[in-house]
Image (cartoon, rainbow, N blue to C red; front, side, top):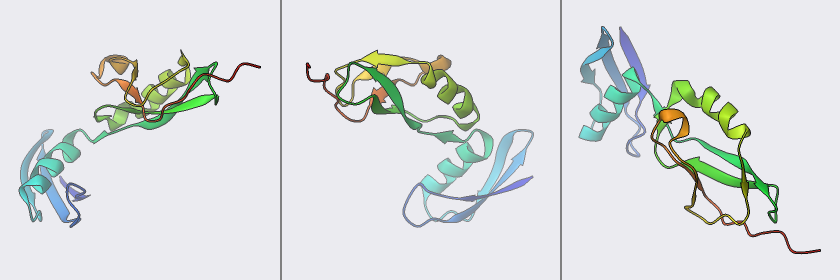
Length: 123
């Protein structure tokens, strides 16, 4: 089976073809740089994405804090990961880069804050 992939490893955006036999990539063509081959081999077998979303923030200046995974996670797990993340809540404050949850569903990825969020001002 041939999978057509638009490579995003560099700005060129090559149209790459990956031949997949028995769940393994046997040939990659169309890439103009070595990064394209690496990207196509991964994308054809197990696509990975960085997940960006938000988490409930208790006693924060805002009700949510923006987060992302610190590494790409399997695309097939994103619905399960987002369902799990919706159940989370963290206490303010949150700092940029702070890990708010570790090893999400066994992926090895941590959920990190992408924005600092202070505690709510006292009333």
